[in-house]
Image (tube, rainbow, N blue to C red; front, side, top):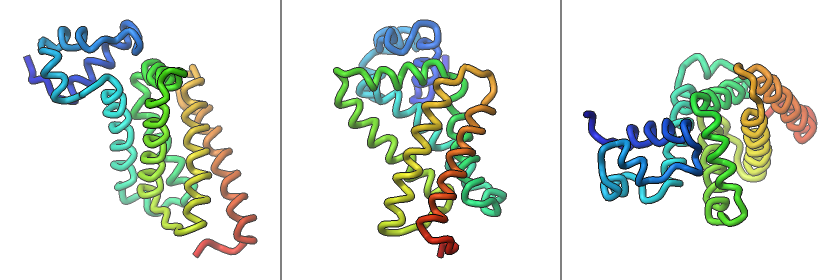
Length: 196
């Protein structure tokens, strides 16, 4: 039997949640499935929500790896962001149903602490998106860009979770429309002057 690593714990948790649901997943069942103890799980994850963070960390890592590809540097900012966000979603696609359940769990009224952590998570992913897309605006322009990107990210993620299609084409088209709108907004905000 292979060692019980963080990655194996996440993979096993996702597999169990696919069979039952994220809400029904219990850490004692996860430990049993892995052939380990709760105490050993605690070494890697103090609570179930940390497994969710590890799952989204994988999507962030996939996006950053895509951002490091040399061919991305020659694309327009719009094309870079489009590709990076689709890469992020693609990293979650194998467990889309469970991902949706994780998000819905965080949005339950009794989980205010999850909602605060979720807002911080969104901010962190948007920051990595800006970095991977080589966005370098500063001060007020950076704040505006972050606000717009956060809206685009959340709208696209929500659209993707609601889309039951087997491919991502409708979400990709939706994202493209949002990015086109953001480009128009940027042109208006800078009175048509190119970005410095």
